[in-house]
Image (cartoon, rainbow, N blue to C red; front, side):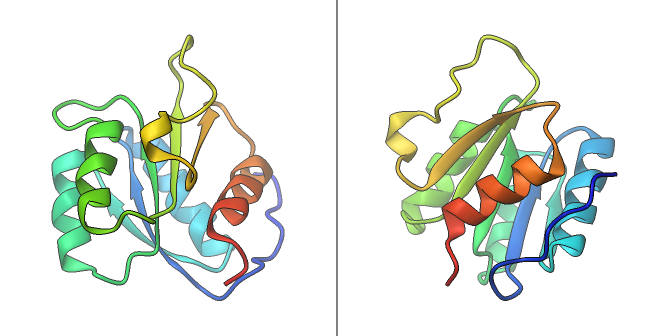
Length: 131
C-alpha cells in the first residue's frame, strides 16, 4: 500500500459506496489512514439509508456503476438535500468521461480505477478544502 500523506483538515465523516468488497475495504482503510471516519455502504440503497442515519457525513466517495441505484442517481438524491456535498466518483469502466457530470459541478471529481491512494487523497482534499 502506498503511503498516504497526513490529512490537511480535521477528521471528516466520509460515505464510501462500492459494490466490490475489496474496494470498500481499501477505501475504508484509506479513510482511517488519512484521519477520516468511513461510513461504508454496499450499494446506492444502503448509501441512502446510511446518509439518513449519519447526518454529519461531509463527503462521498462512490462507484459510478452499481446494481440498483448507481453513483450518479445516488448523488442526485443526496444533493437534493445537500447541494454542496463534495463527491468523488470512481469507476473501472473505460470510456467514461474523466470529468463528472456537469450537474454535479463544481464539488465533484472523477478518478479511474485503478488509482493510487495519493491520487485519491489529492482529489479528495481539493474537493473538501482545508476547512
